[in-house]
Amino acid sequence: MQSFDVEKYVDLFRERVNKVVKPRKFIGLAVEDNAILAVDAHRDKDRFTASLAKAFIFPKGVSLIDPEGFGKALGQFLQENRFSARKAIIGIPAKWLMLREKVVSSATDESIAGILKIYAEREFSLSPEELSLDYTGVTRNDGSRRLFLSAMLKGNLDKAILAARWAGLDVLSVTVSSSVAFSGILAGMSPPAPRLFLYLRDGFAEFLVKDGDLTVDIKHIGKDFKKETASFISELRRIISNYSHNSSNEGAGQLLVWNASSVSIREELKSLSEAMSGNIRVIDGNRQTFTDKLGVPSGGDGETFIAPVMFAWAFNRQEPFYVDFLNSRMNLKASVIKRNQVLWASAAAACLLVLLSAIFFMWRGDKKDVSLLNARFDGMKGDMEAAKEVIQKVNMAAGWYSKRPGMLDCIKALTMTFPEEGTIWITNLALTEEMKGVMSGRATDEKSVIDILDKLKASKLFSDVQMIYLQDNSSRSQEVSFSMNFSYEEKE
Image (cartoon, rainbow, N blue to C red):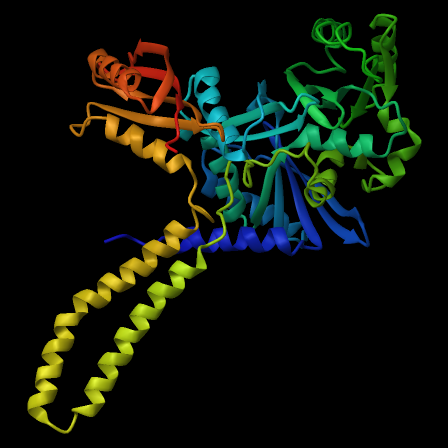
């Protein structure tokens, strides 16, 4: 008997409601190694402003390793400082993020998701179950998609969300702090917009490269710009050298620096400007005229909280640059339910119930007949349960497609090729609309893989069958991993 996870479906319903009904108040939480920058932001017409900003310094012995203890400490901090919002947007640091570029030919969103999952497994040497993935991208002139795959450990995502829930918060989104901050700053600048961005904090910095509205690369610099100026500049110059000479984009020669640290860096910025090559112009973002329109708290160290202030703005824009590990583009939305199937199954069950009720009331005066009807009713319970199961299965299956996709024949043909004894199985399958596919999986031995390859090549339903790789899986006894591509010849 299948179990029903109430909490899972409640969370799913809440996420869908939040996407439709945008809250007017948010709390932005920018996570760092030893602190969280927290901001209460509220909507004023079409603009979000911060009414309260505080830094939660991790108490001694408290960290995200223990989400429950951490969340309770965070909740107490928010309560003591009178944070009122309960809808939270979490920002992660660059050191949690893995970013890779991938060009994919024209394909459906379903195919892209499958291709990127296979790519992530190869690129990051981790199974998709260990990663949280999302991607951003644009369509190029030739119809292909230029994509940027973002990945983080699912364990880190789960701990951050769980800690926020222990703090009494409802998490709406999990994004990348400095990427959102840079996009918010760029929205207020006149063109040509800078392509290079340096986000400074106490003890570390994050360097970003933008192409239009997309973050194409991000680096964590584990040095303090104030205390280690010379070595910091040396490392930054080495990083920038990989980008500044390889782009003709407007703004490629501009480095925008945002000081979100607690100290003045005027002299250090001067040293940075002098150390940069002639084609790199350093811009002090904090001193630009647009800063008063960003909604950062006025006075004190309000500019420190630029990232969490921008979270609400970015979440409501839903532009392509926005990475959201909680509401990932990899999680495909269910298709429209086939209502005719649901109606037919529901009508059959309803007719059965009406018939039983009519028989019961027609013969209720005769005990003998009532007993007979009761016996019949008991005999029909199996049919009623079967009808209910049909309705449930139709409801579930109908969400998978709005019309019968052609790829089902391909999947069936693949299934019939594989042996029943379970010596080989598929873990990932990606199909394009042209019925070109890539599959990867595992087997108990190499012979099972070769047998499948031979069967596919011998089949009239498949062509262009090629092995991509076949290798031992040292972490799982004698199992082997494989990947192959193919084309499916649809029947007329």
